[in-house]
Image (cartoon, rainbow, N blue to C red; front, top):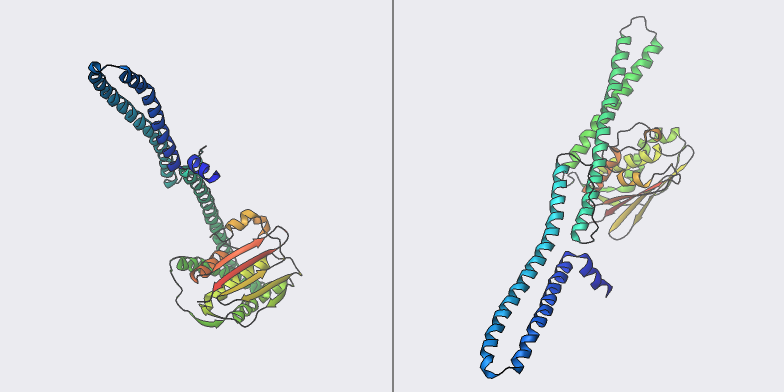
Length: 353
């Protein structure tokens, strides 16, 4: 009964049915009261006046049918006008969004399909606004990040032209130039990589490889970073074969583990575990770091997204976006579970085709 009530109360189709049959019911009631006196007259009339009364009855019947028709059309016009009004309001708002205005929020008291459409429209504008803000911030950050290493390289290169420079100073300045050059190289490489992945529909260089060894290799590549923080690894990596792009999956583990190291405190532990079933492989990467808020979890895999700068070391917000895209191209799924000050757990699910 409750479902039926919600159908007629909260759906356009249900409302139209209610309005339509309500109009018909009212028309029938009006007809009944208008025709009843005529029927009584017919019953009590003589045969001579019967023909005249019947003719009069037909005229009244046509009049009543006309009134019923007008009431039905008027009712449907009122319904359609309300619907069209909401659609026009939504269309106008969508035109503004197409022109780059994301500061739009539509309100409605209804609970029908158009109300649901308005709700999803509001969600869309909210996410677009956030994405536009993130991209704007990214451009600003990248501009700054590009200027800083370029300025350092230029500055120290000019100093190196000094013939009286001490050997130890020269060595230090050369190392700074090399480090800043690597920063520029990593930035350009990540931008090119995410652009290429976004324009792919499938991975190309796929082969059978050991997934557990792939993860161990990525840990070794990051030895300097986790060694500086004295982070230990708790590994549960049974021998696991997987068919995919070995090089790209090395990038996945490297990006996620590097992220775990970045947000972990010193002398903590990172757990990495593989679970296998008949048709599914799950990889868990769990740290004991600072965790993240619900807002950060919602956007953590978006390109260019960075958490509050006061809590983040140098980065460009591309690593996890790259990891997610590679997993998606492999028909897999990546999720994150996290609480503030309780660490984060990344769950990568891969199908065994």
